[in-house]
Image (cartoon, rainbow, N blue to C red; front, side, top):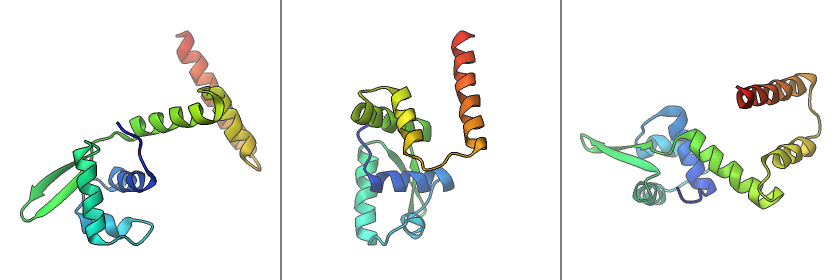
Length: 124
């Protein structure tokens, strides 16, 4: 999977959340105005790069994500770790936590549960 730009990520997010859709349906859910022709061009590129699948139903084309959400997330977080922390996931998590103004007690408990689960899975 090639790098995902913000426009591609937004299209994928819409399709992950709502399933297969026609271009006009995707267009209505985007956060910014996009001309129909520009969206169709972007969708075509994403089909070519295997990020999306396209199928025809009657006269309409429906698009759906071929890239799993988790796969895209893992790729993006690895890239962020490479850029900001020399590839260290732990350092990236630390920087994310440090960059937050406040963490609630519940946030801290949730982070502890995640860390404990990772340790337990590794030891299992």
